[in-house]
Image (tube, rainbow, N blue to C red; front, side, top):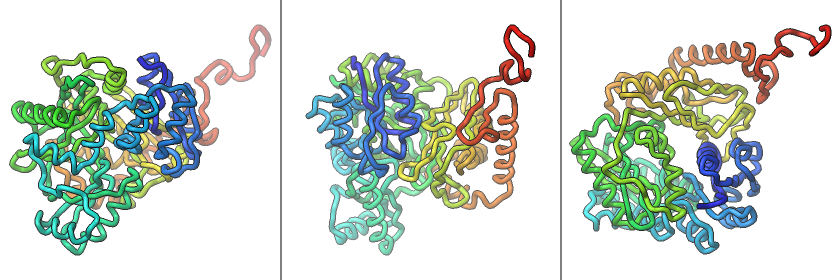
Length: 504
């Protein structure tokens, strides 16, 4: 087993990996840019190494700096989290060359499935149904136009080197193709260091259902069932749940077996996700492999009882996969909401600034994976995710109600967030009924923020925060300044001036 692991990431996923390391008795090394010098993951790690200026290209995407930090700290392995270099085959290969264990798939497997076009080719050979699309990336505008005409509009521009909605654009007609390709390449290059894009046929109003897979270095492979990820904004998931409200046991079994077959065809190892689109006729198509830990991995952990980060580390250390497919089962229902530093009332523009007050929801079946704390300055340079709120309950409706209450109890002041918006999503009648597709947000929430309800909610949150700040033992963010917290109530704070063993 490793003695020390460097986490090549930031925010809530870096905190999540650090906590797993602590539970396993493994030392943790954080890396940070100048913008993250006071970040929570830096404070929680056993060691922290600076990378340089805030831009990702000069810090979290700088492969040589990260490898040098691992070498200097004595780390034996590197966990990439998600985003940044997590699906970069060149980085995995550099780690291997430098004698570092990359906690993820091998560079060969990553090169195959991390390239979305090559992954599609491999799946087609293995008999896995795929969405019609280009067989290769292209730099020629004419080749893109010819491919789009052959596929038929609408088409989808997609990044070849990564996922998470980065670089993705829907193109309704030929006039929009050029601008969509340019914007997709620019966004993909910024997010992944690779601007390659390709085209797929756009399947209208599908469900997005993905299967979590674990595979060890000797080919033992299991799936840990599905996650429903259809609630998306700008092609990025914002709410996930497991089990999917639309799968029956037969379809679940067929899709799970297909996911395992797909990963075996790619020679995949470690944790990964096989993503599918499910159309209105309940036909499913391979979409892509996300060759990393997913943002939404906690919902799988809650319904299966399997710690996915721990499994990643064990597999990377060479341990055989101890899980058997016949022993795995889903229990209860879990829902995750991603909380972003964005303003839903201004088309989800990023909301940077200082977090003046933070109240985390607590209670049975509630998990809050956070990468921030009171006083933290949310930077403008990175993905604006702040935290993930995850709940578990015995059935879907109980989980939905628990999430609604947890969102009401979640208060973040000083910046704009998506908390109120998410509360309305989980309360929507169509979500309650489980009738969701990837067009859910555009269809039901296009005009969100124009009513009075959101302002009322914000005023209530401010009042609750002020009350808590003035209560004994509460946070003093309102009275003592941003980021400061008073101690719990004691005789020194409640009884006035007095001295032990003497007169007051």
